[in-house]
Image (cartoon, rainbow, N blue to C red; front, side, top):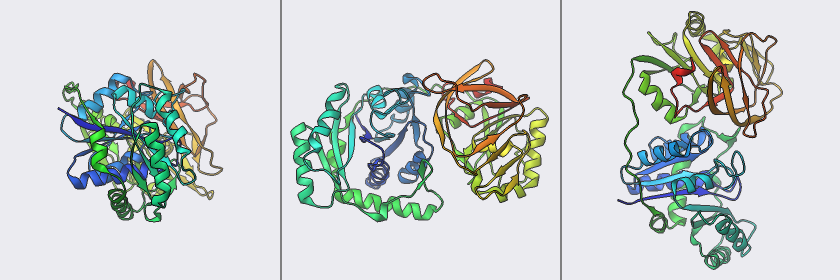
Length: 430
């Protein structure tokens, strides 16, 4: 059986990969082509947008946080039914944690699927030829099947670019004129998602744009691939009750992490903003990352929930808190204007959005004898004057120890790190 699959990559960030991806996903959905979205790397926000566009879950494929075999397993598992796999790359095509490790190029090679390049061609014409030639020949194991030229206003401009692609031996799939109606504002490292109705309109407009400009039939034809029969690795369902915070403040999840939690038992989602207490009979509480800084008043005023979580943690309950969840478990969060809001107060550290400073990168994390990989990304800073609750540390992809620590009090573990446990049992952490 055959499937179509490809990685959407670019020479550098800002070339328009995400807009092309969401437009293609929605266009494929309209055609009945069963699009299957994936994201290279540790990003949370792009998979959310994929899900809106394709109306199905998007999975992260990360060859740094997980093994190549695990990446292959997830991909092949999701490709058991006919469809078109659209894998959005991250940053530049060869940009990885260490050289190209974990990059879009690495994922393309691991999965043995072709690449479609998106080139920002607004300021070039036939000079696209040596650029394309370099990407095609830098790693002969990678098949660059086609190219889409972005930000091209006229057919005459496109004619130079099409000639460049033809002379290099890469199929030209069309060009996309600039369109402010599909421009998506940035928030931090991802995309703005506040106005979901507005975003739906952007997705629809992006699809209209793609359908007019890109030869989708040719794209599917040149990216036909085989696939591998894959059996589920699920080990049966456990008996634990796992409660997951999920609302506008806490919503950064790796989809495979949720799948793994479901193998441990029954998963219940709840809202720290609007619910009054955590679900009954909770065995493990998961407070994921998100944007708590935008909902500080609501979180702080929900005293019943704050008390429910604090009591659970102080009575030996198991809690894993990541980034925004870690901030929530501290004594307070200060917003960008200097106003302080009381939080759960399970730990003595304080976090603040004042004097924002970006911290990001892959992490190798040690918590006691438990080793796991993850990613750190935040603008807030924490202050902590003690040492008693520090229970783990981390190194970056180059092996250098980072300043950020892991906090632990009994069975409560909190850090800025977003952990990936697709190949592990998170219950072993406790």
